[in-house]
Length: 104
Image 1 (tube, helix red, strand yellow):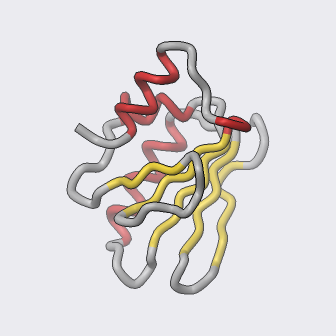
Image 2 (tube, helix red, strand yellow):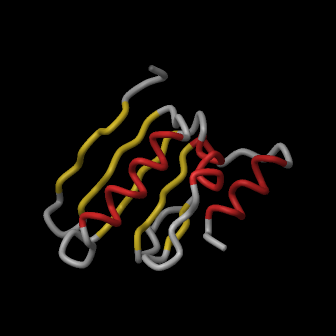
């Protein structure tokens, strides 16, 4: 069971992350209040990703440690869930990419 199950349960119960932002870390725990660590071998399913619908999502990862296929798979699942914004941050190269901006 992936770490996003806890977020899904909280959202289903009417809870919402502070400021509607959730920080996800692939193999790491982001040093933020609303952060969730996602293990490489326990990626969330498309249904589990639905918990980020309408939220601002920041996905952090270490580019030197992650395989591109894992990053691609999680980004596709998160985009399919229709977050308000999706930003990915490579902590090794200090590069940021915005995959989705605003509510479109």
